[in-house]
Amino acid sequence: MATSKPDAILAAALVLFAERGFHGTSVPDLAKAAGVGAGTIYRHFDSKEGVVNALYRRWKQAMVAEVFQTPFEGSWRKRVGSLWRAMFSFHLANPHVVPFLDLHHHSDYLDEQSKVVEQTSAVAWLQLFLDGQKDEALVDGNPAAAIAMAYGAFLGLVRGSQSGYYALDEALIASSEERVWAMIRR
Image (cartoon, rainbow, N blue to C red):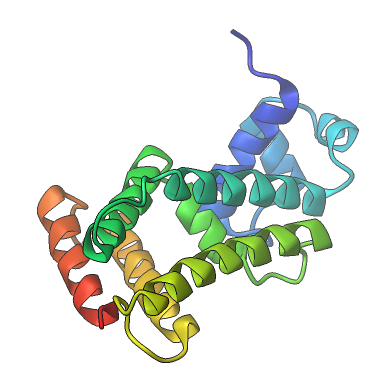
């Protein structure tokens, strides 16, 4: 089945924006990577900012949907483990997405719709953590700090693996899961 031109543009943009960043990617480079003319990009998106915003919303929503579809059953230890593994599963299946989202989530070129998607994601993580605090399973205090530290650990492992320092294998994921649990449990 043939890929639509907008999908080809977004697929090429994901790789280029993850590897080069928004400012390091030109429209002609994007068109070449997508196998379309530069004018075709403007027929489907109003600007390069339109491309990055469409891509950001698509993948941020996909990541949150996949991670939060994880069954939240059993102890909080099991829940945290399931979430941790779901995050790595998503990353391993979509290796350019997490670097892309990480690089662009606070950018000034994100539009209001993209900012709402980011805020909705943050609220989902916050509510999950508040529920764990209410159940006296997760550490007291400001949940934002604990969430940032745990997510930062995830990003650090992703970055290190992509730099070739180590492989994201089962042993590393399991070990890091234990460490994150030790950090956020009550």
